Image 1 (cartoon, rainbow, N blue to C red):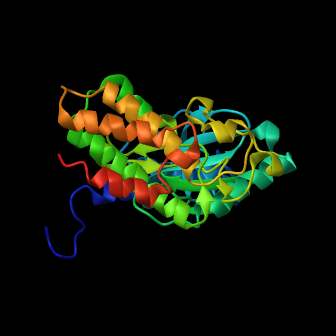
Image 2 (image 1 turned 180 degrees about the horizontal axis):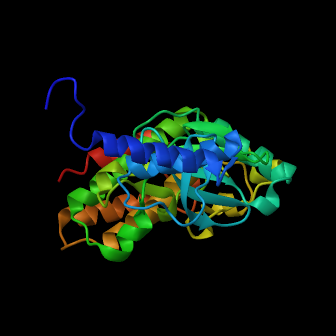
Length: 305
């Protein structure tokens, strides 16, 4: 084959590409509109990028011409969470938006945007902050965050943990809360479902969901927010509707540590020290808890593995 000749098979590929482009841009002999052509081309491009052998049967949905919706992973009230894929980078993300039937609910819309504003105040490895906010075609706000497929709840249901892993998990949570509290916020919904992992490894725990977070000194009743997302982990003062500070989050941490210790492999001095620490965090009277996440973290670091 000379340098001027195309590689073997290229002519055949070129002919097939021409046929493909005609199919994308025409419905029979009639030209398709530019929007429909672009949508079909996006689907072909995505299939090639992902090395799929065939196109998905369902119509692909693109958001902001950038994120392809892959699945609804949570459908609650009033919000949904979707797993989406960036069409160019192929990265996975979580997209949180309102349910379609709440699209025109002004209160829900304002609260979701408030969640974005509060979350974006924080930049820390142990906080899954909102990366950006979008507006969907129907006007619903949507929040984009990193995709993390596991929760601490998943791990509690399937795994046993060493004392070192439990200590590291609590370091991660308290380090994230230290940043939350430094930003002047109370998370107010620390629970296993709101602690995310990219893999089943407790070292990379991240705090998520600032849906009922407060600025320190606020009460949920002042903002028409539900007082507890996961009431099992809510501090007594939160259930009573009082003004909150970071010690409400520490109460939840104590209960989470107790759950982790129930899944601990073996017994010994470290487990006993961690159990005492859990009791300190989850005191009924907040004046008896550590003053803040920084103080709690210092106490935890004194427990030597």
